[in-house]
Image (tube, rainbow, N blue to C red; front, side, top):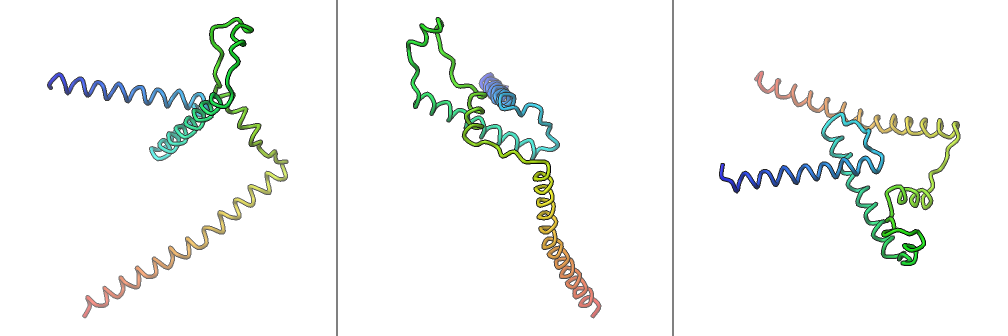
Length: 151
């Protein structure tokens, strides 16, 4: 293997490591580190959500820096050389304040679960009907073919 190809392969593997490491760090920061993946589709879905969430956090941090400039005197007040930037936890707090979650009573929770189960059951009916129709059409086509072969 020529040295140039070896270096390209090493660069690709190195880039892959840092991309995967970045995604693992992002999952940890947003609180999804403990998700276990049962198949590759679920893994890619979690990866996509992780990337979108990280992008949202980054956009929020950039918007915050542009809209709220820091007072330079705070460095002297806190006797430090640098002021902290917005963190993922800060973005989470901002999001919770902007879009508070509705707190359900136990009775409301039960009603909501029953409604979801009811909707899921109702949605199965047309699919089962379509599946039965497909089977009937297939069987009738098969019987026509068998009948034609018998001639």
